[in-house]
Length: 428
View: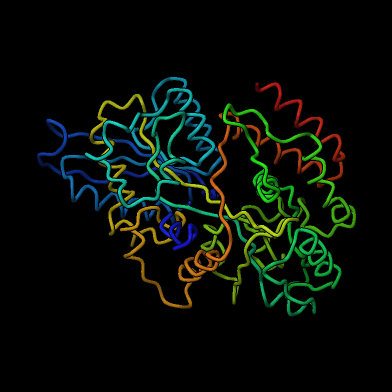
């Protein structure tokens, strides 16, 4: 069995945009981990759909542990972390929280998370998870996270738009240069939507730092050293961004002004982009894309795709007054088979093999396509999830902001590199 095949039971994430909402589950009575009734708080980012899934899963938990009541709250990705930052400063974090890879590292190193080591093997069962995802849940030798889902990058394609453009489909072993040429050709074809809106070939690959990391890994370079320092140079950043300068200058990429105009809608989801390079956990966003197809990431110069996985975690707060009950909730949401049926692949491919095994979807469903895409990666070499510094979330946010300026043409690539590097150095 290949390493990628074994990873079918695991991965990062993407963040689903939505408005803030709060809800509360019911309670019962019984004799559980503590000495009496306990109330826990849980928080996550997502939308109304994810909220409904969480509430259904929490109802299952309360039925299993009737002496534990769970109150829940959520918000969009940005407001979620704003709230967590404020609560962390006051040591008043919710008992259980959803975490992406970067923020798990930051909060773990800052002492805000519950050390799960005493509960693994007792309240928490990780025997159905691959070592690689457990490693991703570990920060500086301490396990703070319980992996719930895994994700990897892929290129989503709208075949109807491509056919209308007259441009030949991409070969699965396409390169970054092939992708840029293809995007330019689709945009130049002049294809429009039924409403007369221009259709673009795709999005700027400088949109997120994760694409830069993927590019580095394909060259056999780790992005960060174990101490969190950069293992890449300013020249690497410039080379990566310079590759797409011609497309920005010719307006071949989906424009940021249109992205702002249609927000929170997605340009690919509404048929105004022929492709989008993004996380495979975003299948659920594209229910209206007929015949949705997915290709692996571009191939690097040495012929490697260097597929890697990131992990979506749940973690407990160091300030929780009920660590054992918190551990029980973490385990339930990460390993219970009925919970897997509730969430499907909306949190990524389940990290626990027992949760993965119970998933059964119609062949033409997006969930089945998600699993099939992950299976299609078996032929490619995989690499370990990159070690991230505690400052990664801030580095990424600065990168995204500067890329928007780059797309609008208010800064050059050189200015992007200098400003980003300067701010990165200031973080230490």
